[in-house]
Length: 373
Image 1 (cartoon, helix red, strand yellow):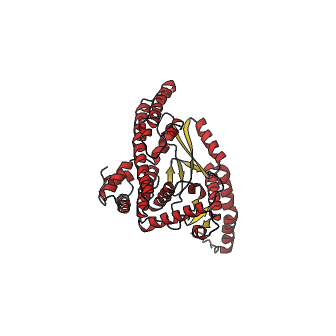
Image 2 (cartoon, rainbow, N blue to C red):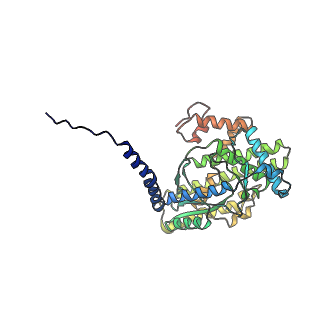
Image 3 (cartoon, helix red, strand yellow):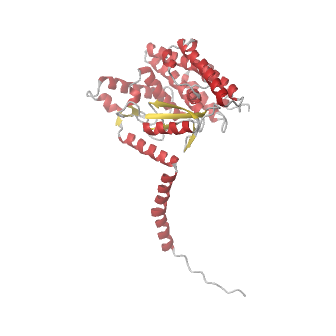
């Protein structure tokens, strides 16, 4: 017969002390190790610190508009932002939350530099993965030197890179994003389009689908700005917003054709001098279009800027992020009698009723009816 062993009752006080020691000592140690060993963790931590610094410097916009001591031009721009924000909420029915109710003077011309990258022999974006937003084909840096260093590291690994400034960014409504002084300097049409663009992200955002998210926001930004200015009787800025949207669609077609030609060339598994010759030929063709018939036909862009603008795979990918299948958005706009609010709602319904699918496929379907695979 087996001996009976008497079990001692658990010492709950001792267990609690061990658990407290783990929380107070072990967790901080793990966090420190993560910061030391993981570049991604360090990046997120630095970005979080910068975001906190921005949030701590916020000033409510309404009192600034009411204060006679505020510079006249700034008062006018801030008042325009509040009006655009109200229009986005009431007329466009976008999710505005507390976004753009505050203002931050960043004290510098460029707050954020964005790095994009791609393989040289394929039109394939280098991606980074972050919580909430998923995989994205760009990475933003508040520190210009870190941005340039990151781009240089990628170039040493053989990637094409593209470094560009950003005047605004969205936390998708998780924080009350302030209006940054970098955006206020834009002309009135672009300022309103930027405000509505960023609010569109709060309203519809599909994880790991950056081209769709940015192209949708571009559509809502410019079509929404056009509707806003028409409602105010400002026909000049309304026409400028409509012209900019036409230009965006024209550039969409050009970048799409360049991407098609590059994909065709890269399918031949080119390398060495043959790869460089193919790239030089195709990028030369694109520059000729941008400084020639396409560029000179644009209504709101100065074609001369394209003469010295960089061209490589990373640039093509970055340009297409904001201009992919724009005519599809406009087709739905026309189906909804050119009513921007109804179009936004129709796009939301199509995307939300097609879970786990490419959102562009959802746009080809009827609301509530699964699209074809």
